[in-house]
Image 1 (cartoon, one colour):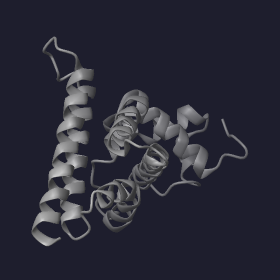
Image 2: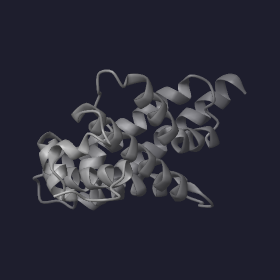
Image 3: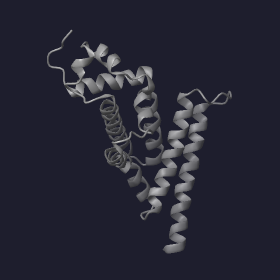
Image 4: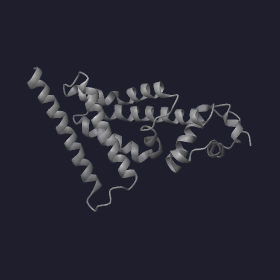
Length: 193
């Protein structure tokens, strides 16, 4: 049951597909080995252990999220809306990967911090466009991210049980976020400008 030419990237991609289908909590070395057609010990040529694999999946997730978010805000006249919908599409398309972006992993804190910062750089650019440039930009970015991440996490868990349209709720949430960004910008200009 050996597979010649298997790479770390192939292992990580298979693991990412697995967590999208089965969830992060069900990830095992055996499950990924089965998915790539090798015996579990063969994976240790490509990963150190399960935590290393979890980290690699999180890194893959952050890079994919960053790619999508950058593309969403390039050349648009409605960057917050396009950013928010790209974030939501990522959660719909890659639910397991999206879930890994909100988790910590002991021993990998610094690497995850760097990956998270890179993934959220498009959001900071969007906030900077609203004129918020000091430490408040980080606070606003955390607010926007937590609002979007919270929404998509509840949505993924089928937590919105009332009959009203979830899409309309999401649109309302984006409108509220836009209002917060606009008011923060206006307030800053009034106080400092």
